[in-house]
Image 1 (spheres, rainbow, N blue to C red):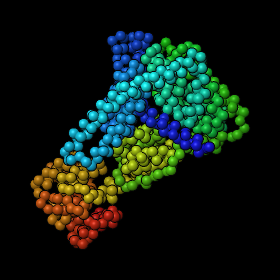
Image 2: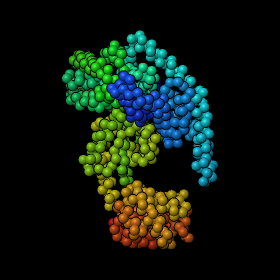
Image 3: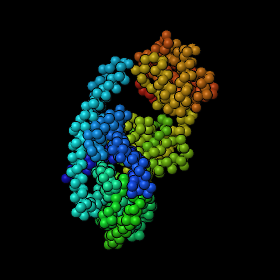
Image 4: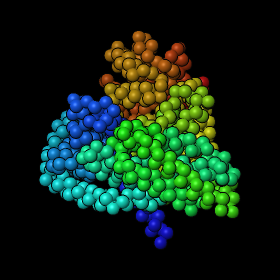
Length: 613
């Protein structure tokens, strides 16, 4: 039964990750719309009838299109995003209500369909016709998707929305909305908060806000009061590590709006969930009593972000509700902690591990950090806002103290990992998902985003690599065996791309390499070519380095054929020594032939670097 429960939870978390992955990247646009509504609506801070005309079109068109585009992009890149946005127009026009749910359906669905269509043409299109086939296949498919969304999905989602809205209205009319937190608070601790807030409450709240200008559904999950109350209870009545760390976490939660850090304090003593529920229910009673609501989703859920999307007439009851949530959660938590005889000093560490393991189950896949030049390190989690944000902050500080100022450290949601990231850091239960999104990056698993010695190991490894690569003329990762390169143009394109990536040269150095080939071929005549830039392009070199490209099938180099290409970037007169050593190492044709046929990069590296300092 436990295995079934874990599997179901993992599936729900994954589904929640898909939903939040469409909404979270666009939260800024939602807040823009919410602030315009709060400020310029008839009941806003500075009513303005002209500016208020933006509210409707942004709600009906902009926000659903952004969701549809992001959903498609998460599935199939930019191409999926375009077809996802196009298909979303079908549900927007085909319904009379804001189509957030329709966008969440059509964005990914359209991208999946396009991905399958592209597979039908893969390898069957003649060179030069790729663009026209790609554009027309997407365009024709888009017709069917838009019409299907217009006549089918739009009306279906509108009907479903009416049913769900009626259910929510029934809960509100019967005074039951405060007790929704009996389900919401435990779900938050199980990491279903994104699914509930952005996948259910958010879309329904937008519909309600479009009708009456605000919605109580926007504040049910983001209210920071219950979590802050639990943390304050630990601050005054906890013991050991829990007592010492709770104040700092309370500040992060209250003013940073990051909820995840307080979850371990409930997981270490599950009965504390009663304090969170009691606090949330108390706040909800105030919210319903005074008929308050927010004009948009508050994200992240801090005191400030909640007030930022509230109407000014609701400020006092909202503040009162959040404070009451905090006070009630604090008193209930204090009673629970005082009645408890169990010491918590050693429990927090285990709770943190339990908290992280709740996210999902999965094998750890960790690739060792190689000796390549590292420029981008991303810390990734489900939504890219909670634990990963704190992990990235810690790592960024360590990088700064180590003098690694040029390395980009960011936090991001796993579906939004960019393709050029060098190292991806994830919780061990999420590494599988990160590897599937970005298989070519180096992946490092941690068991705790907050305090893990792997951060120190990562920083030390990168520091050693950086120092080494500042003086190394050739690193193993820059020995490329590529049997598909056909001519010198393709070879120079690839070599220059690597040089730019690894900081050897500016992108303009490539023009100097091609200019050199026009002046005189760099083919040495024994199966080896040494492309390098002209004297005028020397200014585009940043540091000395080599890139070696091998193709045993041969590369057409002007009127000859080469099988080994050694791209050279030399900032001073080092190229003379480089050429001299290459001549010595490759003068024996047997050695050269062996290298060309060799597929062991370590052996190739060993021969090429002999006597090269």
